[in-house]
Length: 417
Image (tube, rainbow, N blue to C red; front, side, top):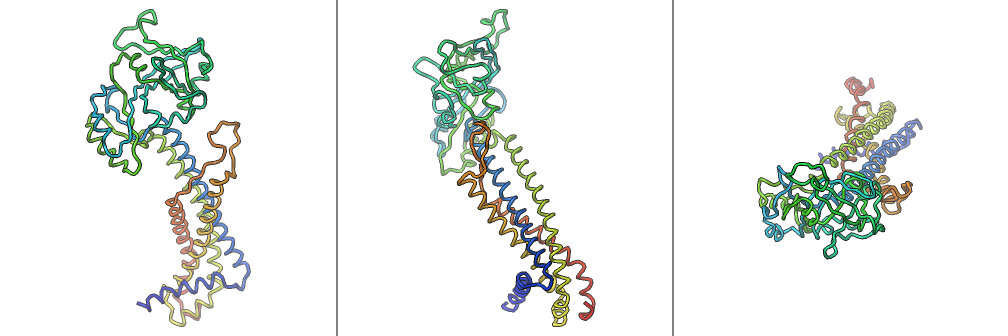
């Protein structure tokens, strides 16, 4: 066992000496250093870019969470259902469920000072703000939907801009028009639409797609406009920390039955998540290709080292070293060059990412157009492991290439090398 261990350590020992020993040709030292730097720079860029993508992904998903709670229960087919169709008492008392809220959503036409805009009115219950955090994204006014018998609106920033609505305008409310259900359209709007006039109490800003489309309203106002008694479009749920979301989702699905679908946060925004994932991995493969190009320096460095060490190879072969052992020495040499660059790049990339997270060195200058004023960064250890494994595989292939020509020569007698 010890003999086998020594046999495995011998190639590493020789390769380590070759890496740091002074070569007869200074160009080999320079090329080896360039190889390490090239791999390090490529690895560092890969770590930083992936971390920035993770940061933007985390930021965007956190913003979209204002409209996408931990769990959501909707009909598989249909728009609204009586709230009694779900065992809400059992759901509320289920381990892992913190709270729930009713949601009733419908398209509507709003008018303000002769300006019109098609929107989605989302009627929500009192617990909705605590479930989603929408109240933390109000940029003007306050998050207040009801005050005794009065109902208020919270339009998106884009909606408010289009219809020129303001929380300081106490003379001109926002008029909401929703088609009456089950009735033919008459000549007069009052016969075709249910309407309501309400003042905005706050304005939220999440993302332009939602800011231009959504208006938050009390669920009781939506039921009145839609001629509903207790129907809802969905039940949104907040989960308690420390519980497995997958297990809670499975229990909720079992309670809800086949007529309903229970979706977690990622399933509610699956298309967005897939796009972000695709962009991230596209960048990963592009930068990996750059690493492949950088590995040509490793090929050149190892080729020159093999040429310089021809006499050493002859000596090793004369002493009984097998072809496999000599191959392992130079293969280990190439892997040492690649891994030295990889470890240096991962360390530098992690350091730069940490400095960006800590101090926001690279800032975003857009006159308040962004939620954050510096590039968001999120370093994830699985990404670091993936980068290291990628560099290892590229280094392995790059190290094998210059050894192919050497094998034919090694089949000749030792003195002829």
